[in-house]
Length: 301
Image 1 (cartoon, one colour):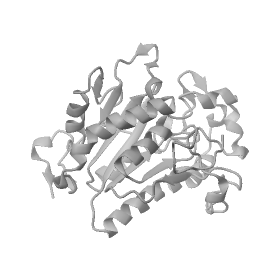
Image 2 (image 1 turned 180 degrees about the vertical axis):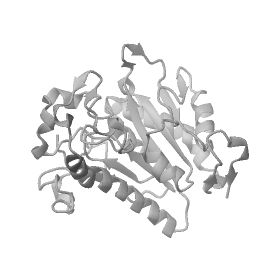
Image 3 (image 1 turned 90 degrees about the vertical axis):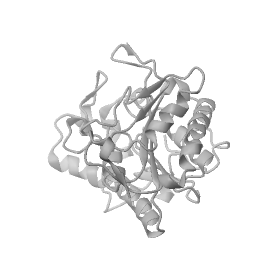
Image 4 (image 1 turned 30 degrees about the horizontal axis):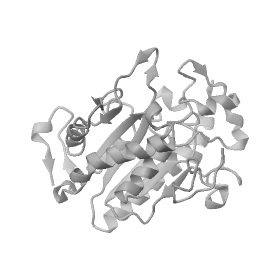
């Protein structure tokens, strides 16, 4: 499950889980990441010129060797409970389409979910879609802190550094958060091909929904099947809303992006929908909203 990175997705047959030689931070600072393991995060398209940062929280099913897959059978790593299937390829193809740098998590969401506030029980989930996670049963606070220090914090610190670099350059970037979802969950069929998630800031999400609804045969969810207003989401809330950055979260159904051809097709669909939106220079300004229900009085500065 550990593959060498390749900045050319046309030549890389699988999602690009970074090689251990690209993880100089392994060791004392990240106690659960050892030589030979994937790093907690990796970059893609670092020379991308757009004022956009793409992130993929659940891009990898990877477990460090010492964690023994948390006691799970290997087949579980192929299931959606371990990662967002297709999201790594989707994020990389979209990165190429938009000429935008991307930052992808390099660890399974079952170790610690990087898109959950740490006090939420699902951050260290014990049962996911009916599958018990043995290594997450009865975790001590010390065990959780080791995972936070080794995976959660390094990933989010890397995002912060990328956003700080935009700040230093005097630019306000757009944050695009890429996820994928199952076509059926808890025996409920999901009709949406793609969902657009947002909360206070409509600047990217609302026109993106309008653009996607013009695509023939595409069913678009407005905060469906997941909502950007979920109280325990973390990545957009912490990195984008806190800074007032324009942003959007996207969920594409996994049966549509589970192959490289499907991921490339949907990166094109998303890229086409975003192209006009991202071309507007007025977008790259900070957003100040009084609250979730106060869109009419929200200000851009």
